[in-house]
Amino acid sequence: QVQLVESGGGLVQAGGSLRLSCAASGRTFSRYAMGWFRQAPGKEREFVAAISRSGRNTYYADSVKGRFTISRDSAENTVYLQMNSLKPEDTAVYYCAAEVTASGTDYYTRRNEYDYWGQGTQVTVSS
Image 1 (cartoon, rainbow, N blue to C red):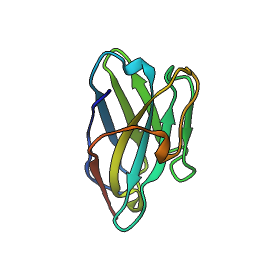
Image 2: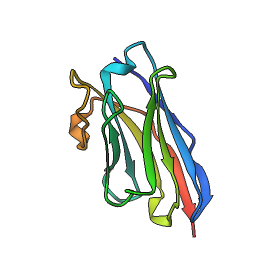
Image 3: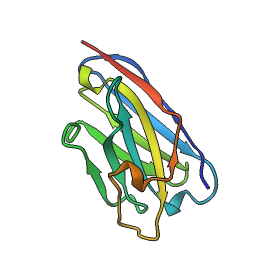
């Protein structure tokens, strides 16, 4: 089992940047594929980005492609989401998720593929 704690959210002006962090407990971080999702008020939680166990494979939602970058640091048991050129429509609570996998290259984009979730961190982008 893994516990996830997000941080790094806040208030930023449109065009600005933020870096979210998700710290994972335990010694088995390398067994997990990781993902970021977000949920805006009144909307369903949606996929943002995913990264494989190895870190070699990543995938992004079309809405953030070219602006957001997901990465992971196994030494720090942390996954990051670098968010650049932020837009007001990026405003949401951002959640980190983890799924144990035997594959070093697979990543997951659906909510029901993930068993473990963090508590979320608020990102607000002002216009």
